[in-house]
Length: 308
Image (cartoon, rainbow, N blue to C red; front, top):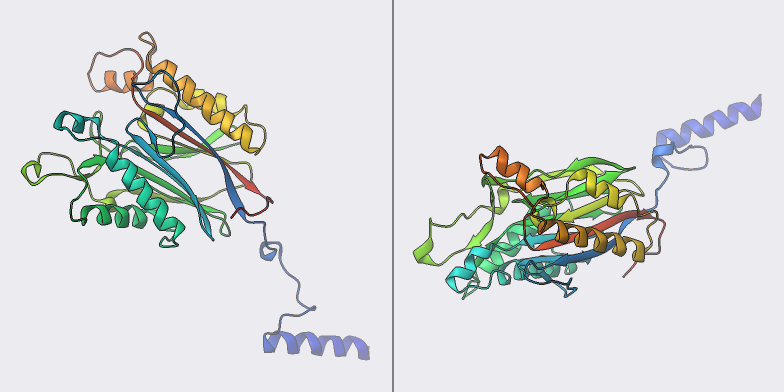
């Protein structure tokens, strides 16, 4: 009885003094989890080329980046507006520079994973404030995995976007932002004489979201060239073939998806998601939509050695 009383006094003293010692039991929630990370693959096509290209940054007028810093894995895509070509402007330059600036800020630690809209805004403002601003416009989509929080934070402006897939089902999809059919929200830098004639949206209107992810989840980023040509069901069929997190398997999945989207985009008899949307908008259209295509496939994984 004396030893029991002594034990009780020791426990009480520990609780009162706030000391965490062997008398306190951790609940399951307090047991540290392995940080999560992304294993990524990327692929794409320019609508003007007959073969896939694997240059860093660009597929046609699309651009992308994949980056990592001390706390987060970050992926992003942007789709340049091809109409600038009629004015003698390279439409790929604006999205390529935007994504390169976002990547640099992530790598330099000038980035809060919980607020990807801020890095889009900061990168856009840096481009806008240059002595000779880069003319052009693009959509933008960034997804950041905070490894310790096991949470994904996103910002999407325009009609690029992403899916989160768990156990063969889409559990989250970004919202598409359009002014009207086939005219997405976009960031833009325009010459003074075209002010008011070109859509120019603020980065702050990007749709933001956050949600917890688990080991084995798949995050699929794409420009509209992907989602206008492949339905969710078709994308699920291709991602279901990826059985593990090995980098080569993730890359194969990205390549297979990009190739399928490319071939469907030139199929005149295919009732693509774009064709169905056109019909809903009162436009008689059938077939795929030829466009630049960018795909990033990311597998959420735990327990792997940290990459530097």
